[in-house]
Image (cartoon, rainbow, N blue to C red; front, side, top):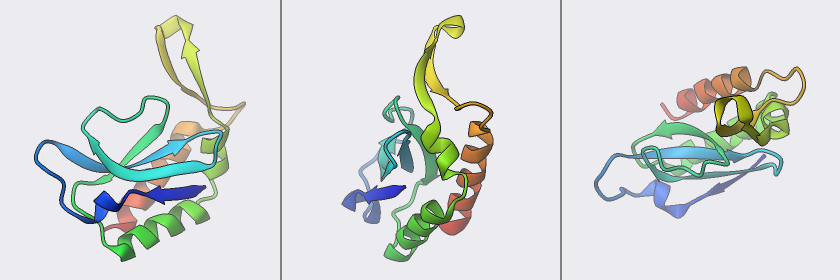
Length: 116
């Protein structure tokens, strides 16, 4: 999956409750590392909070490597954005027997380890 990095993640962001997040766009093999206000990420993405502090180039390189090497990325990329009628909400659903939530949880852990 290709990671686009917004330049702002390497410098402090103005007040408020902001976090650096990796937003994954299933079905496109794209992701974006950017600042997000708490709770205002694009709803059509799977968003993983990486931290609250600006990142170094080394940390960004590690994040890119984790994403490139993560074996569960195909599971995340196969997820489909769909309306869950029984719950009256939109969400990503796994493809077939894929363990989407397990893959996201594992990737989250690896990303957080890579920046600390």
